Image (cartoon, rainbow, N blue to C red; front, side, top):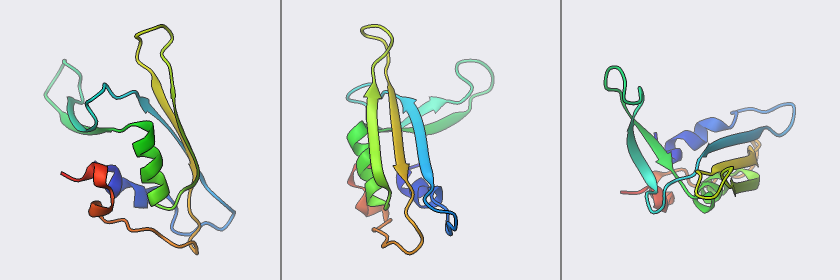
Length: 115
C-alpha cells in the first residue's frame, strides 16, 4: 500500500498522554528501483501471493513523514555488515498531536508516489 494512504493511519486520532513515537526499519532499495515493487509474499515457495512494497530513499521517507505532520524526523541508512552487502534504512519520528495543523494528505501531495 502506498505510504500516502498509510501515513494518516499511523498516528493516533487522539493522544492524551503526550507525543507518540514511530520507529521503523526496511531494507535498502536497490537503486534506481524506487517506488512500488511487486514481490512474492511467499518467496519462491508455495502458492503465488503477489504483494506490493514501497521502496523509498531516506529523503523520500523523511519528506513523506514531514508532509504528514510528523516532527523530529530522522531517517538514515545503516550500511551492510560488509562492503556490497545490503543496508538497512532506520527511521524515527514523533506523531502530530490532534490539535496541530495537518498537511495535505492527498495522493497528489506526495509527488514521489504519483504515477
